[in-house]
Image 1 (cartoon, rainbow, N blue to C red):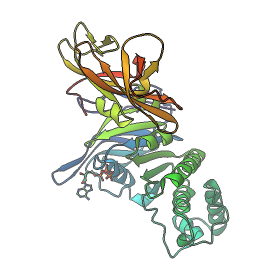
Image 2: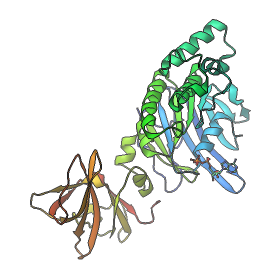
Image 3: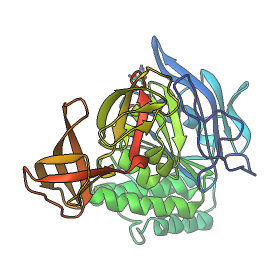
Image 4: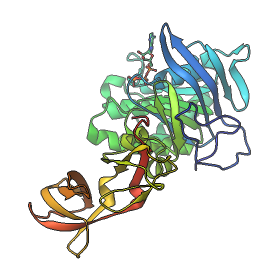
Length: 378
Ligand code: ATP
């Protein structure tokens, strides 16, 4: 899906990276955040954050604990008073520019970590709570449709304590979607679920959100979850958005070492730029525009290293091989041109377990090797 954030910078700050998606948008974004800034005393929690979410799109805000994700969501919802910037829904300002629409009038559906269902109300009554303005028949039709949308037909009379965690989460989602909001905000909605259930509920949630056509902004600190759920991902660090793009763009074209590492383990090599290149045991790589004599680091994904018995250089000496299920992880040692031993990890699909001490040639898929200055954001 991936679209450019119309009219607003997708990324900000000196070290930030522009959005690589460049599709024009005919409609205004369903949710548009423009230059949001927010402080808690001395703490700058959100720093000039701009982001747009279009109808039918799921965008994930990804970053470590404390980077400001929840604060962005709370500002959009109206749960935090806007200090700087603007929030618009369907092209209409709802906060900023002298406007402050109260949370319940923003047309936003909310799902937070703890589901927060009313324990003394049935599932049907919990969903009906946001539909008080509708007449009885219309309200009932919405409740039935909302429960159907999350696969919980027939659960209307149950109380929350009679439901599993996953079912409670789906009721919370049904409640958020029942009123037909144009925007849905989710804050770590799967964090209370165990790993096995989480996969299933994520899948059901994605289907329900896509079925609703709402614009979704979801907060998570889990990169794999962001890749599963998001049409696009905005990577946050210390209150700023560093890079926005599709999961594929962020994984294959990270704009900073920090982004590359967020999406999976990397091998790290150091080199100095000479003649527009950096030297590696696999031969020279383009220096990614870095100036001469700059100290660079080369990040290589383990799956970019291919081991084979065919003759070739460099040669990797196997230190250990481990079966991890869907992939095998191979620890190896390579001697570089300076005679130094470099320890690298390779990852191969399926079962591939060379013997300790075995010597194999190693080839590099250069599309999975990234060159950054050593001072780059980590
Ligand atoms: P987490 O994933 O742990 O929820 P987050 O990325 O959502 O983290 P926020 O909750 O937005 O981060 O917090 C951003 C920063 O603002 C943190 O340094 C946090 O301690 C601070 N902060 C958040 N809420 C408040 C508050 N009500 N009062 C003071 N400081 C706050």
